[in-house]
Length: 116
Image (tube, rainbow, N blue to C red):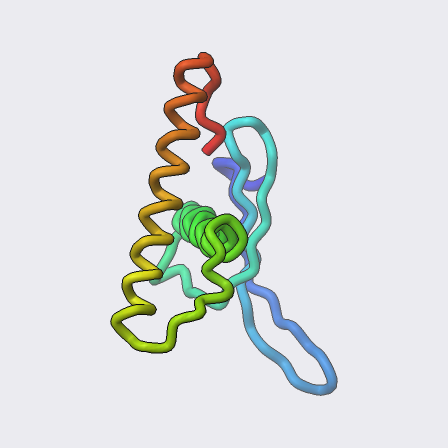
């Protein structure tokens, strides 16, 4: 592992005669676990640690959308009027936020650490 637990190298990907330049980043986490990322974002835009943080945040957004679709039923809205759709979306986001707050409160009372 390179200095500071970071690997940051340029690679050239090839498939069916086509090529693309990319960047492979590996960042070692405090627990010793190594996370790998493939990106086209240049070093002048994001450092290796910033790439890791961007992917971590992106994953949190993916989990939010998953919770909205499966947890509160956002995948099947039955409204068609824009105002009604917007109201349902707001209600579902509020319901998800309240359920998350309730979950965190219960974990705190039970002495469990937050998993996020």
